[in-house]
Image 1: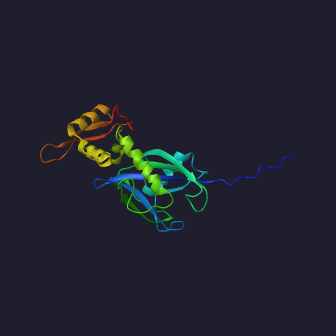
Image 2: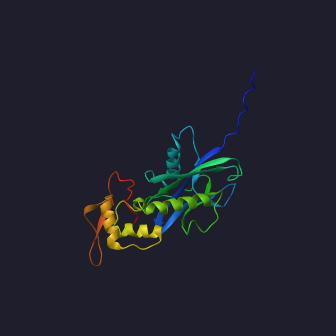
Image 3: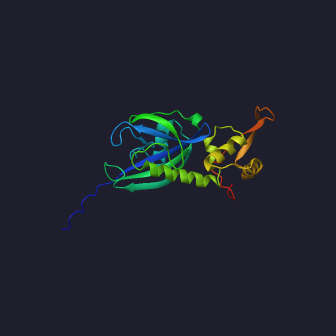
Length: 231
């Protein structure tokens, strides 16, 4: 008689989110201060275990965590990478499926949740923030930042950091903030209009000292547009 195969312990599976927003002209990430061990009082990316009973898939788990922490339910959300080993969490072998989300800070209503002592936006400096992070979240955050910067070079991603209505100078400022370099105004405007992912709001102008700026919005259905060449 063949002996039954012994059950193997299953790793814990979580989702962790690098939630980015533009605040006072600077790219920020949302962090939670942990209220309990392990890493009590340390800052970490928002995250949580996958709820196998209610989460239809891992994307649903990520959307749930995002809404729980920010009250934003329709952001730009993208899976970045999976991280897993027996050392990243002292409680045992864990797998984290990491996501990045881009939201407008004006639309977010930050919530601490039961396991957080505090919640706050932290400015990005280089590939991280000016505080140690729990677990391997510094590695996850650095990976998400690199993904964002790489994709900004050839996509419409920064528009998701803006409010529903904006000017082209607003959009250019976000590209420049993330990429860390200035762009020619005329060339930038030409590339954005050619990419055709924004549209002017008829009659909407932002008052200015010389010429009022046209106000735009993201075209319906244009979540992400990839440009034919880098900016």
